[in-house]
Image 1 (cartoon, rainbow, N blue to C red):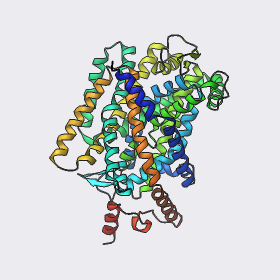
Image 2 (cartoon, rainbow, N blue to C red; image 1 turned 90 degrees about the vertical axis):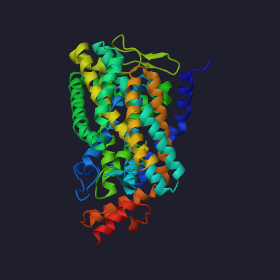
Image 3 (spheres, helix red, strand yellow; image 1 turned 60 degrees about the vertical axis):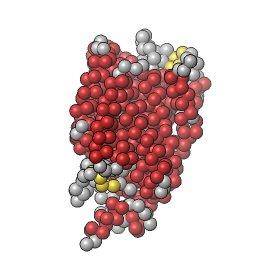
Image 4 (spheres, rainbow, N blue to C red; image 1 turned 45 degrees about the horizontal axis):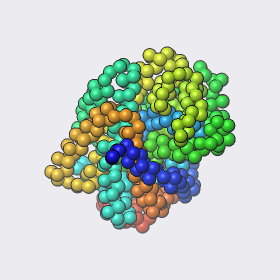
Length: 489
């Protein structure tokens, strides 16, 4: 008898084989070394460039809006539910591996965002870019570019939105005792109102909601940690000991710690996945490197700030339990009734400060905003992929309406399914995109490195950096060549 869940789990195992874990870590390390750890050397520049926009470009969104949309895609259920899942199945050490993939992944995020800017196109009054564009123009492989666009369209348009709506539905159902269908319908309606307005409305909403909620959430975690200050050193010690297999309870699941840390880390921060590169191409900046640095910074905000806030709250309050691959309990929580790893861990951590009822409401609201803005970002990623596949014309307009309906329907669908099923579908989408994109950026690795060296030379000589693809021998950068010729008139 055909069992859909068994098939899905088998596909997840194929996509998220140890080879992908090694590839993600290896690519991040490679770009970090090639750029001489740009994510450290230019940390201050990353923050400064958040508010730098090339106003001479008449189309596109601001650098900060591109950062906010990318942050919306990165900061979602992965920061609240995904972190708890990583701890539950990989132990406290999984969080350290999330940090490692974030630090190294910032190098990959720089590379993919810079490539997206190099090969971006102007289309119907806005910029479009991302892996499909730099694969076609940089690698001269249309089939490979189409393959990524199809994977991104399916992943971001169908597989991943249900993960976010599922987290909202489960949290609200547990807190307010509302039927999941009602919650799903409400979220789907709100999403419909936003995505109909296109990228500019998405960017405007994200620029306000995403940073505001991230700051409030981190402040909440700091208050909780202040009340549990004595437990923080022990929690950090558990994390680092578990990450290297030295913890007496979790030493036997070191492989799970690495795998869950990398998998949930990439799901959360999206470094190397290619989706951050899609929104990076929409920004109007005077040099591709500038958006590369901004997107590298967004990885830090997601994992090193928001994910860490969740993790240390859970660990310091000991509101978690860990199971091995056979389902055997390795560590029980200080409180009862947590159930499977998920949002309950985070809610229980907050409840130690303000009580179960208030904690449920607070986490539900935070999850609503985080997940809602993430779905908005997913829609934009899917829209750009669809535009790449279809191009201009009436066919594109009709297809965009079909996509909007599909995303709204998938949001409603996600509220009705069990969490494991939708998370597995999301894992397949993320993993497939990561395989294609990481291979592509490794093959194109020389170009973002050359662009960075040009940027640094120009800065050192006191110039306002400008991008000249001809000087670097980069073909296919049609927008930047046209811009250069226009400025030379």
